[in-house]
Image (cartoon, rainbow, N blue to C red):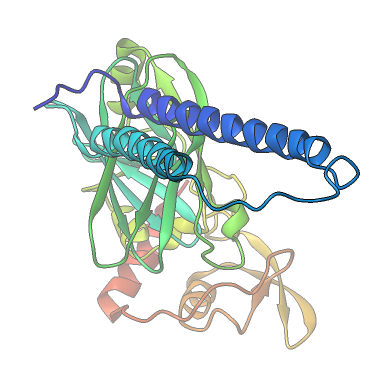
Length: 303
């Protein structure tokens, strides 16, 4: 087996340059020949055209050359595909969940965050799943794009060699807030990453075994934040007892976010729409009375 000497980003760039170079050569060649034929065989210079009966050598050449070019592009593309699908041994796994309209990342120690932190110089395996519709994990800085499918687990991987901040986008239209479905990627040194991944108090973080996990499981954190930041819906930070302005029956009302209000908002989200936010929240499909009580108690306990 031919060893993999390039990471997927380098191989994809390599394939792109090959295809671009071949395409540019063909474009310039055809354009040059067209201009040459335009003048060389103009009707004023050749009033009596000569009959052309065919040229076996020319037909052979223009058949073999495209076959060679297409075969070369295929081999380069296949090598890139193998590089993207062959995850190195010891790659760091991060379970990535897509939902309308957010990305969440779960680490092996149980930390869940809405920002993708990765250590520099270590291969990262992204294990993808979707909780609703088809999404597409697209990280242009690393030339990777892979669909996240409901009911099916997919994967991709990349090798972050430079520290810095990058962006993950959704490249598959998934609803009204599709354009806002992005997440920050932070490539940090191993020491910085270890400190971050073991700190469960960072903004936007959820513990997989903690009480806030139900908010993650039910998809609440796709549109609502825990740290005060604004997403598709109002933040959960300090929501219990907060004065809230809602649109009810076309009229604006002021109320307090008590337990009764939280229950109404979950069970009948279209009855009272928080002012300044679109009517996007669907009615719950699989929430039991026990889960509802757990969510209410969790929201009441948020600082």
